Length: 297
Image (tube, rainbow, N blue to C red):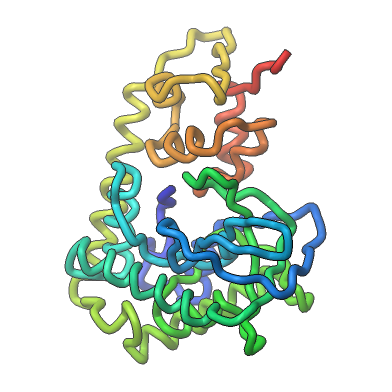
């Protein structure tokens, strides 16, 4: 689930540009947004700040907000623990417990803001996750007419990062990204929410450690990749059936991608891997010779 954060690549980059890079150009397109009015939050143990169960008419949905990422509320798996560590380093927090604390604060904030009926805008594009009910990407407009993702960023309870698309009012994905980056910049300066405990002295050090571990993992994965004989094509793996060890042998494959690929099964087509954070069109083309979707017949 974790994606390397480009915001730490250079302290001289303008913060808005850093945010645009963090989004990686990923956009979920295709179907038109549908508007679901009168939606209500459903209390559920798996709810958090940016992902929660919703009842909209006869529909039961698990919504994953576009554009933002809140801290985790628990770390029950290795993948969760790695994600919490990455978030801790991004925000410059002292330890994992404080990171989880702010995840719980964001969860409570969302529950309070959505205590009155709200509107969901979604094209039902699937978002990866462990929920038994598939998660779908969506924007949420509160009863007061405010965008929930924007409120979370303004309050210092989320970072501007993730999958995006054109907004319901026609605002482009790039413009919305810019707006959220500006809001995040303001929240940092005001030291609100998670930014109140960010350690500016250690932030660069922590992010550098994250990058170093990513490079180390890349090198390790490259050394462990199964060699391909010259002049021969690799035997592609069925991503719906391959074991974790088999996927790990693919050149350039990362542990967090493997977690997301397995969590998102079954995949209908190879392009579904674009939903995995960190896998863009160029990366997919590098992986394509090594993966396939077996004919279900």
